[in-house]
Image 1 (cartoon, helix red, strand yellow):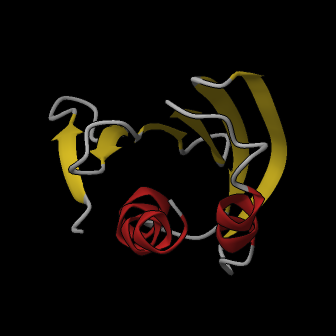
Image 2: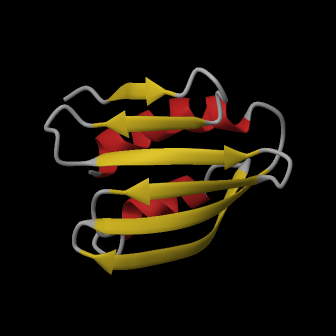
Length: 102
C-alpha cells in the first residue's frame, strides 16, 4: 500500500493533506514556522494508534506535545518542530510512519 501526498496548499506551502489509498485515513498538517508548531488533524482516533504517535515523537526534529481524540473519526496532535524545513521533512517521514502503523 502506497501513501501519497494528496494536496499541498500552493499559496502558503504550510499545509498539506496526506491520505492512504484506502480513502479511510488521512492527515492534514498545518505548520506555523514562526512559532515552531505543527498541528495534525486526523480522520481517525489517535488513542488506538499510539505506536503511530510514538514513531512521530521519535523523530529528532519533532516532539509530540499534546494529543486529543474527540471520537473514533477525529483527533488532533500538536507538535513542536525544530530546525529548518520541518514541514518538508515531516511530510517525507510521516508517509513512512503512516504506511508502517496505520
